[in-house]
Length: 101
Image (tube, rainbow, N blue to C red):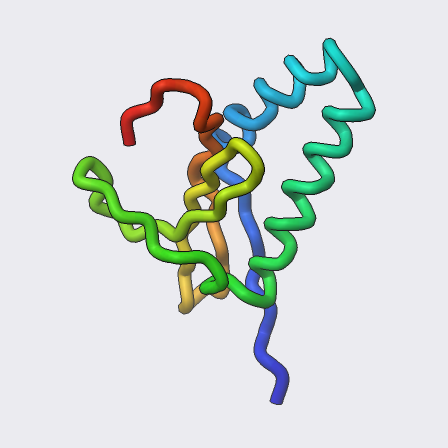
């Protein structure tokens, strides 16, 4: 019996975080913005079959258990809901900014 695929859901906050960077990059190069966006979507698509591929993220400030995907200069935090077979992308941080997590 094949494993059921997970559904990847991007939170509004995560979408807005990444969209801000894509819009900024598009002002310089639409091609680069499209490429970056497509690359991230491809990384997230892998989570449909392998949600535990990336390690657990540890932080003193965050009590929720997230997993972390490092993509270029971005830190993507997501959670896995086994019962619903959902991977929820919660945050997409630009690591060049001084973010306290």
